[in-house]
Amino acid sequence: MTEYLYAIGDIHGCAGLLEKALAWIDNNASGNPTHIVFMGDYIDRGPDSKAVLDILMAGPRVKGSRYTCLRGNHEQMCLDSQLSSRDMENWRFNGGDTALRSFGGGIGEAYRNWMSSLPYWHEDSLRIFVHAGLLPGIPLVEQDPYDMMWIRERFFRSRKSFGKHVVHGHTPVGPTLLKRRTNIDTGAYHTGQLCVAGFLDSTDPRPSIIVLVE
Image (cartoon, rainbow, N blue to C red; front, side, top):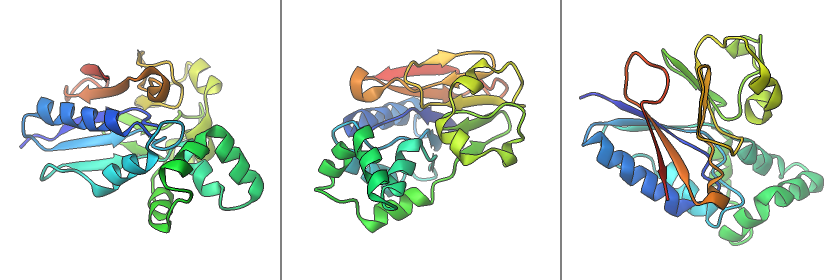
């Protein structure tokens, strides 16, 4: 059976929207196995970070399907919060307070271990998937993880080719479909919309379908 490729934008604790996005994908794929790339920022700001992580950590519900969950800057801030009181305060200020409430006050070791295992990027024959973007002029394998999770303006302004189409989130102005990149971060926690991109054309790196679930 053909594997259908999709990507889901920044979820930020919106478990209900994630469930709707997964249901839409199941229907669109019509029983075919799917590969879903999640763009990072699963936690913080929205109401139910714990439920989002539970869904992702449980894995696909359709036999033969797979998930690739990238690391976002909010997962990194959560991990860094264990290092010092200053890092904890920074995370809480940037939405970690809502994540902590959803966990009843503390994020367990299993969740932290899962977040620490997440890759910074995923590549296929046509695309590079990364949370925030890439630093121009640097080969993919030499990119700094910090840039992959945080970069904005230098990535946006660059006219250099990254070799493949870049699919990203991190900047909540999407969906934005351009020649070199596609941004699928819609700021779900404040817009009430979560972006799903379907890459169903084996020759075109850009999304063949964009859906906003509400």
